[in-house]
Length: 61
Image (cartoon, rainbow, N blue to C red):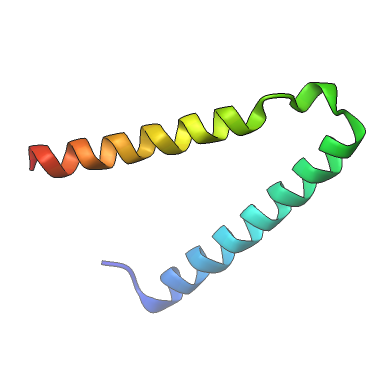
């Protein structure tokens, strides 16, 4: 379905994207502490929703 070059590119892109987003998040979090209150709850909710949809998909198929 995908060539090995496309898979390598996707992996490198994903790692770079996550690294840059994480760096910016922690940099901004130091500067604006009030803006980022409760962000871990949002992260947990997103992860829980993803797990729920994966389990639901496995049960239906």
